[in-house]
Length: 343
Length: 290
Image (cartoon, rainbow over all chains, first blue to last red; front, side, top):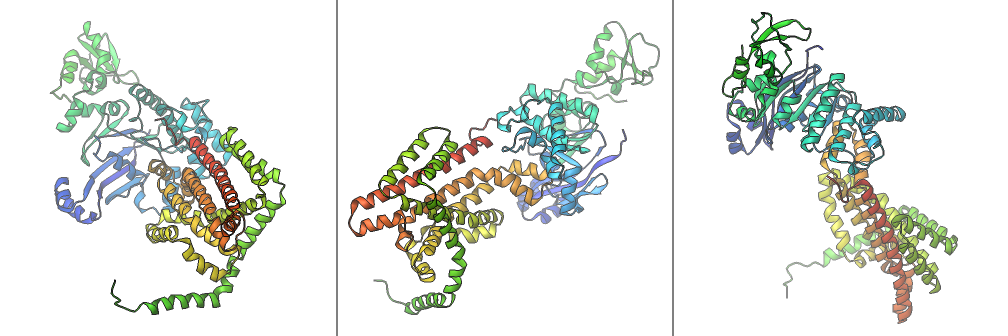
């Protein structure tokens, strides 16, 4: 897995209103969002957001409603044009594309899953899944075969001829997911894809997505307002507040070292023992032989029982090489809320 | 009394003279332009009259069954059409049907593209809306006179007047239907890189179809409502019988022909409406599960 930047947003600013330029120069002069809105009546949707996503990672943007996350994701496939800033995908400037190039880009490089599914109500499931391929101009037999395969992959076999309104919410979103996956694009955009679903179905879908990702290695740009969802599926998380990026990092980095009060509020309710992995808090100098050993991806929860009989537990990397050690003290320090421990 | 501030007689004269001028110099051109309409109407009429009566009844009853999947409407269709025939109104009813069908078809040919164009351009909507208002509210006699002057009495002015009256609801409902298509679905289509044509024919029109069908239904009803007035300028059919009944004070003739119009209205209204409803159910717009 190479770690090149596949998606690169640079200083993306979006202002809603009829006089965006005036508001933009105010923002650049350092005015706050509220000041701009008071002075010009323009609403700042995103303020100078820069982030980059590496190939093959699941990048989650987390924020409450109104934080601009849905606006942000729509910049990637240019459903929304920014007021200023640049959007690079695979090294190409999306904003400089002609209409024709943009259509080709949307048909071949990015696929999207929507919060409200966005299925075509007048088509049955298989034609919905094949829709993107049809738009692209794939021949009928081939697109139906591909659609059939993805319907089976997401577990909807037998529902090919059903109409979307005959399915439950979870099933409808599976159709949405299959439709996006059938496009076989490198990038998958998911806009609150699981937010409209019941908690149990939601976690089932999260699991399914992670399972698929293990085989597909897509670059997934995922939007959510649910911090637990973010830490569950995200390789990296960006926290968005009021149109501005507050913090970007791995789930552990954010939990162990929240950037401000806003992030702290989210982190408070997280089961830290389940999220923090021993690799992030181990003592790298502790290489003395231990009776018990765990891999670095294990969570604190996994390692806790071992401390009943051992003072130190060895930490191994994926290949089984010893890379450090961990003690009960270190785990407790990491789990304690108000203290950050990062060596 | 309202004071006479300016003399409006010259203005009236200008209007009258202009119409006269148009009739004298452009009348032939208008007639030639409307000739395809006459051909359409005549061929539909001739075709329907060439069919045996039982076949028409069978086809309409079959359409009613296909639309409702129940036996009530087809039975009503069969009984009421046989009654029409017994009242010696069969030929008139077929002529009226032909006028209504050709008016509806022509309305669709002009109305659907106009409605689509209106949904896409705010400017066009601003221009067309008052025109449509005018077409719907202006008493038909007001434009009937110039239309007759231009085309001469006969079937063509009757058809033109019927189209003027029947087109507004279809245009409006087509526009409305397309604008009411769920933005979520449109955005999804957009994200998959649809061309404007793919968006229109693959998403917007199919999803607006129930509303558009309601427009077609309205157009048929408006066309039937016009048949009596249209018969004054030479359309023939059931409307002519009503007119004769009034003229000769034959209440029975007027009443039976009037009831005949009602029968046709009910048949075509129920059939088109049921088709719309079934379509809506198929799409899942009615009683959607969330």
